[in-house]
Image 1 (tube, rainbow, N blue to C red):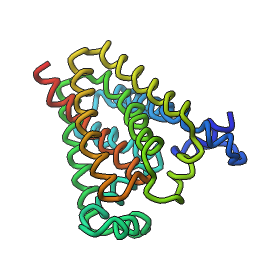
Image 2 (cartoon, one colour):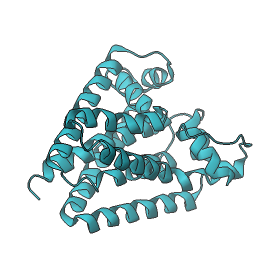
Image 3 (cartoon, helix red, strand yellow):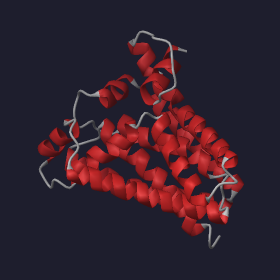
Image 4 (cartoon, rainbow, N blue to C red):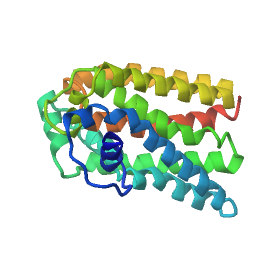
Length: 249
């Protein structure tokens, strides 16, 4: 229960009691991480139906804000920081310094605006055509499972930071649990639509196969911000795949 509370207090704005951050509690924290995604998905799905009588563009704006608000923007912040660091074209040390810098640069702002505009367009397309709406809520849990896994099993770029704090405390069983979460979520999506499920598996595989070597080379390993970048990127790429692939499948 303490691990559950720590997980939700760290990665969401859901009010939780204050508890002690012990090593044992941190060790088990990521077991519950995808549950935040399922909560976001449930709220996303409920809001979609509550706003079913509204214009698709208005509904899309509300829906794209839900995961950012409920997560407290922690993953979106990782996306912005990663883009700032990436487009600095500096060496790994400089990029890590930029990741830790609390200020937002021009590239981060441009990337954030581009991301939100693209996500708005994707949601508008999915809502307008009623394309596989039931699949989207599971993406938020899937993005968290796949975002956390590289942070846990790959080399960390720096020994400090919140990402390293949680990752260093975790063990092999947590990695196996997240792999199980991932397999279950993909299985559910495949049951809902086999072809879309296979498409999303392909997209996730290609994205991680490209980004993980890049992150290792450019940053010297994984950080919490890079994990947030993966989570936010998948929350755009997977609905985009549904919007495009759903037209043909």
